[in-house]
Structure formats: structure tokens, C-alpha cells
Length: 163
Image (cartoon, rainbow, N blue to C red; front, side, top):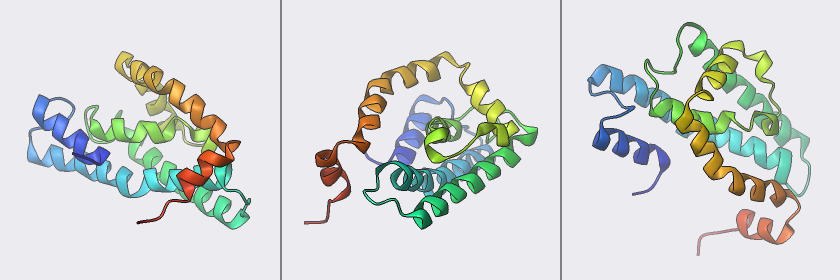
């Protein structure tokens, strides 16, 4: 099995946690999960690339993806204006999105500009399991922070083509 969204759905169904049984509620979660897969994740990833890793600082790319992440944060902020979580109860949709909001500074964002998103961010950071998950990935994030300086790793990571 591959693709994080599919993995989250599978685990939610298998264990009956963080993924509703009710069809309408499940569709609500799926909408936000797919929104992350098709929008927030790819756009935040591009913002990270152009802002932190691109060998040439291309202002158009930096602005394009920084602004798009800002727009997407705005979508989340609006959604969270009248609810605690993206799709009802805490779910795999929140799990999928939080990882792309944690590095908001690297995306050129300020959570103070998005008060409802910031409240959600802080709410999720009070969940012990989330904190344990963040700790697991800390070493990898620190290694990746050095990627901007590692030209050999960049050649492998950013120069791959189909064979």
C-alpha cells in the first residue's frame, strides 16, 4: 500500500478510529483529506522547494507558492472559524493537514494572520499522540534542514527522472 491518504483511510477503516462510519460524515473527512493531498501538501512542498532548496532563487516561484499556501491557509482558517476540527471530530483529515502547517515559517507564513487556524494548530499540539509523532520525526526534520547546504543530496532528491 502506498500514498499517505490511502494509508490513513485504510487504518481508519481497519481500526475504527478517527474515520467515521456514517457515510455523510466520512465524505466530509474525505473532502478535507483529498483537499490536503491535492492542494495543501503539493503547494506547501513547492513553497519549501523554491524558498529553501532551489539552487537559483526564482522570485516568481517563491511568490507563486508562498501566496498559494497563504490562500490555502485562508481556506482552512475560514473552515475552522466555527468548528474545532476540519471535518467534525478530530480525524485523519486533521492528521494529514497538521504536518503541512507545522513548518509554516519555512513556507513564509505567519499563523497570527490566521487566528482560527492558529487555534486549531495549538489545539492539536495539546494532543499527546501528536506530540509523540512530532518527536519521532524530529531527527529527520533536522537532517532535512541541512539539505539546503547538501548539494550532493539535492542532486539525488531533485534530479531524478524516470528510467
